[in-house]
Figure 1 (cartoon, rainbow, N blue to C red):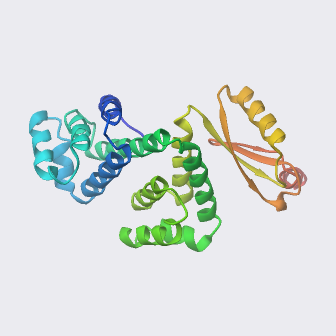
Figure 2: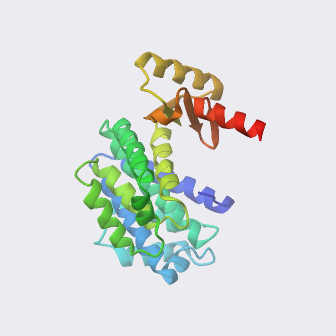
Figure 3: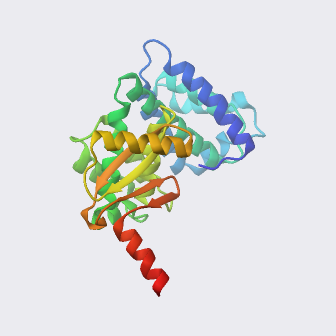
Length: 272
């Protein structure tokens, strides 16, 4: 997500309010996150409303009254207080306001997983789901299809995964397939994995290995990557016997190819 200066400031203020709201006794962060993402869907479909709420030349109180008039009784008071902070501040564009609201919704959902002690499991499930999707050409195509109705894609996600994943994972994935906007579904899902890892101030390493790694090997690799990158690293490992041996490690946009197939490919390029 790329935001200009005004939007970054607005998001920072809204994040502070979100933290206050979800930290209160009796507030369900998951419900707040789901409601905020529902408002994202509304604003995506209502161009005029989106522009009115992001109009920095209008009275901030008028914008909050407008949104409360539309949503009062439809979303909870905790969510309305977060939305007050969103529309009461100045954003660089209507689109950045919606993107910021999306970020807040995701953060609230991950906060609920963290509070329930399930953030590790949510991160693992998101990673496995991402690998399942990119490993199936037909599923990848169906969920990435910009022309397909959003509700049809949400139904597909529910049919395939609803009974197999945590509710937080399901909500996040449904929302992602609705707002791909040209991004590949695999990259979008990997972004959710990274968000979950960031809850514990970690980065993600996607490791492809020719054979399973022992606990000791995982720990050694994690320690080595921490030394290289200067921060804790969450390992997500998948097995691909076609590598022939060794590992392929991806951290962000950087790829370390230590596999046998990678070395052979490099040799072929040198000889060509």
